[in-house]
Amino acid sequence: MSAPDDLTRLTAADLAARLAAGEVSSTEATRAHLDRIGAVDGPVHAFLHVSADEALATARAVDQARAQGEPLHPLAGVPIAVKDVVVTRGLPTTAGSRILEGWVPPYDATLVRKIKAARLPILGKTNMDEFAMGSSTEHSGYGNTHNPWDLDRIPGGSGGGSAAAVAAYEAPLAIGTDTGGSIRQPAAVTGTVGVKPTYGSVSRYGLIALASSLDQAGPVTRTVLDAALLHGLIAGHDPHDSTSLTDPVPDFAAAARLGATGDLTGVRVGVVTELRGEGYQPGVLARFEESLDLLRQAGAQIVEVSCPHFEYALAAYYLILPAEASSNLAKFDGMRYGVRVEPDEGPATAERVMAATRGRGFGDEVKRRIILGTYALSAGYYDAYYGSAQKVRTLIQRDFAAAFTQTDVLVSPTAPTTAFKLGEKLDDPLAMYLNDVATIPVNLAGVPGMSLPSGLSDDGLPAGFQVIAPAREDARLYRVGAALERLLETRWGGPLLKDAPELEVAK
Amino acid sequence: MSTPWRDEVARVAGLARIDLTPTELDRLSGELEVIVHSVARVSEIATPDVPATSHPLPLSNVFRADEPEAPLDRDEVLAQAPAAQDGKFLVPQILGEDA
Image (cartoon, rainbow over all chains, first blue to last red; front, side, top):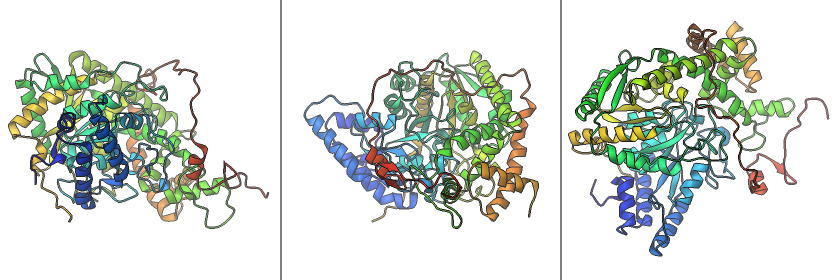
């Protein structure tokens, strides 16, 4: 069923235009998405919580305001899903962890305040790996999400819920967060679009912190233009986040519309030597090469650049992230929020209650990373591990700086493989970590990155194309991304998602 | 069975305030050994002349306007606490000695 009047199949931009023209109401659009969630989310399990009443109340208020001729944000009335790591006042927020089961935050993240001020109905909270630690959502404390392309496969992670929600037409827009690839890798394996903005472009206030020097929230959508529109809504300086950039927000949508003309004359595109080749699935590489050909035909100049220190990025990341996470997650002590577990025996002192609460409340991957981070920061090891990782970070930043003297954007496959089977890598942490080999350098350097679909690999599953720009030049992602999307869709005869199997609809 | 890595994981878990079961200790000690060995290669290129980077886009002297803002609603906050009493968080005894 993909009738043109099915509101869930519209892009956010098209839905916004129909809302503005008065052809449909936000109530109709919101109800259509809630119905879709009811029909397919059982097997997909993208949502941890659906906020139907709140979403419909927002939708009705938008419809009323529109009827009265009030000025509205262009995305007003377009429904959105929010990753469960982002705090939402009055809506349960768990970050995928049992330790926060049932917690209802007393405040909104800044990006949620912006969404509420612009009056986008919030459909619910999406599933994720616990505290955003993972690449498959298999580390969620509430069961994994399934890839809409093949329900036996992972939807990527940590933001697999947000990616699956937009891929399954349960929401036109979603919020993700990306610490090492958690927006881009799920986008790649679900045939959707995801952007990790420049570090500081979007406020981190109200994000349950994983690694504070790497975390960044961004848009999860089906098209490049929709990502640009959503990025424009959530970006901007926030006095509540001292790392938030003070620069004015560029017009990302204008960049996407410019790109959609399909002309990239004079744009210099660098192919990173170290992010292709060994470990990459042949079908993923083939789609990558075809996309390069299209960019070349659009007038772009393709050059090869080397970033020799990228091969150390994964090692540096798995020291810096656990170190920061072990510190950030120390606040889950069973005192002020979340669950409290008393020790089975002996005195119930605060220290012993904290240890019992964390022993019971945290899942395997969270324990693994806190132990690793605490070890790396402990006396005698700090210089060899954490100190060295911070130096590698400098070398990776220098690689980017050198590459961007010769190029305007860098490109690579987003992830080395397509979606793997659920359970396949669960017992091998290092194999799981390799999924993020091409996305991690971007977070270490704070630069922006986008993933968009490049086609189907030999196994019939989506592959992703990553575009990387210098810090503060996010607009370049939208220009190049929209151009490639246009050229690919012309070849495919429509969006890649039209080739996804129809999900069985529950009665 | 006691091994150097198992002892190390037990020590670090104590620092991190996480109770681990004997099974978890066994598994994590094997995994930590493999992961630490893998990430240790950062020291291959971290020579003394390379400065450390702690933040991707360093900012300095960040202040916000000194303006009063409404605090979180106390009752809303305490309603989410594991235990509360008389408008305060209720916590277990902080010190281990007899009261």
